[in-house]
Amino acid sequence: MSKVIDGRMTHRHEGELVVFHIGMQINRWWRPDLWMPLMGDMPRMLRELSVDPDSGLLGFEILLGSGGPYLVQYWSSIDKLYAYASNPAQEHRPAWTRFNKRARKASDAVGIWHETFLVERAETIYVSTKPMGLPKATELVPVGRRHDRAPERFADGRTVAGSGALGQE
Image 1 (cartoon, one colour):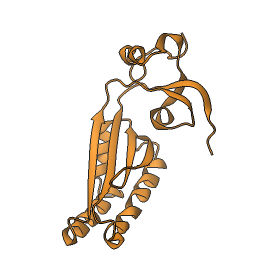
Image 2 (cartoon, one colour):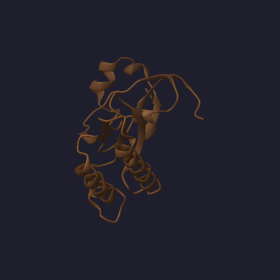
Image 3 (cartoon, helix red, strand yellow):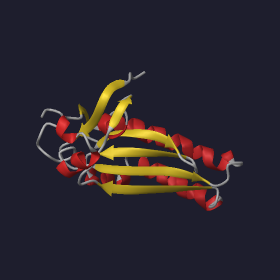
Image 4 (cartoon, one colour):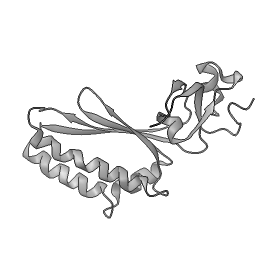
C-alpha cells in the first residue's frame, strides 16, 4: 500500500499530455447479465497497456461515478492513444466489437462514453495524499515557494511543458 506523502506536491511533465476519460453508464442496474460481461474487458486492456512501456499510457485512476465505473487515463500522445484504439491485434478492437454486438441486443441496458483532452497546461496540488492522479502518472515534485498558489502554478505552465525544475527555486 502506498504511503501518504506529507506536504504540498504538484506534478511535472515535459511534452505532450493527453487526458482520456472512459466509462460505463449502467442504465439497468437490475440486469447485471447485460452489463457485467463488459466489466472484464477493461482490466485486460489496462494490463496490456501497462506492460508495454511504448504503449503511451502513463497511468490511470479507476473511479466510480453516479452511472457506473470510469477511468481517467494519462497518455504521452494523442497518436499513441488512437493507434491503440484502432489496432486490431490488441485488446481494444475486439472489446469494442463485443460491446457493439451486446448493445444491439439490449441497447438501453448499458452505455459507453469517453472524453479526450489534449492538455496544453495543467495545474495540480496534492496535500498529504497518497500518490494519485497526474503526479502519479508523470512526476511528483514539491510545490516551490514561487508556485504556492494555483494561479501561479497555472500561469507558469512549467508543470506540463516547461523547462524549469518546479520546486527547485
